[in-house]
Length: 416
Image (cartoon, rainbow, N blue to C red; front, side):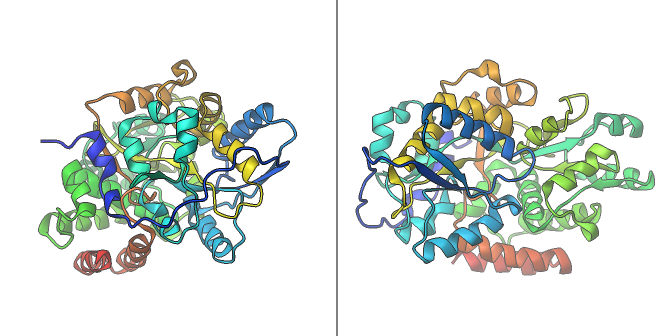
């Protein structure tokens, strides 16, 4: 029997150790500047941030926005820079984080403030899905404000390219492998790929497609054995998928990898729905210039992640930071941001008429009680930073040596 949306999103968070009492959120501080740290600097991301900042400025005249965005790697580069700042007692006023276990280390280190009073003041607890509230609650405390919901498990393609090949998007990874051989014979790359984090993004969705929602979530709850036969078989299949990619010439980031699909030199790309925002900013139209389906084997499963913002302890401008968080959690802010970003709102009471094309189906499926929800590994939902770092190291070796048993053993040992 399938697990509920609430229990899936909440998995693992109840075991976190709680830090000491928070100093709370300042209510009356008068600040004229707010420094916000994010990784939204590339095409398809910065447009969403700009829309959110524009709405913030309209509601907060006189507060200057200091954009401290660091580009690249779906936040991997930014998080390295941020870690140094936090360790050195130099926090920004607010910083981006993925909702879920990614914040575990920062919470335990005492870097972030409890925001529950702000939630109660703004009435947010009644406006977010219960499962999402569970996913961001640690004990009785809440340390971030989610601004959106993204979907990881999507396969992007150029309809014109597939039509020329006489193909339709594959429903399983076995079907993809068959198509890959046909595509390669026609002189095209079956699957474009980017740097290490995109390879991990692909890995999680191959595992999801092969193991199913229960088997996939079990990898992080302990119910699924990383060293068992089903996982080994899925990892071997992932090796076969990568063999049909342009791994040897991996793009600098996710956008250049997706560009190859747009140009018609690659048939497919596995990427989250932020790709929709990027493709639209390039003037393309959904179903004509580009299309997507759920990644092979993941139909009616929503592999979710959520971008959120925090209030660091010792923020230089806490009053302005509080205003920024209110903006992020507001209807106006989320409806300004998400249509540009290619994501759906975290709130349930936003204006659905603003979400068209791909986003119309995403909003409907997120709200559908029959949709299975699982959390992204790559984007911080189901594994903390320490285990994720060990997985990254093991994956870098796996991509080169293709030793599934060695990779599985390293990941299983890293969880201990």
